[in-house]
Image (cartoon, rainbow, N blue to C red; front, side, top):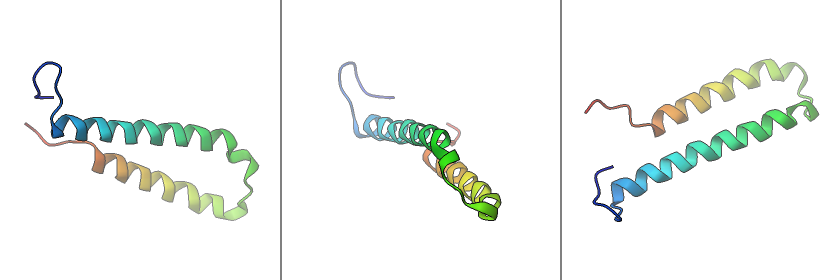
Length: 69
């Protein structure tokens, strides 16, 4: 983060926001994994899990700054 001491610029706020989204997603996944046993999707579960996992992986890679500096 490139701002001076005790100040925040828009780049800092954007990074904090992205981190908050990642942490919130992790908390939501934890909650869902704890309560997934109550949901009975039958044969659709085999299709649902990889699609959701790929979606979350895509979202995380999109949110992270993987550019080389």
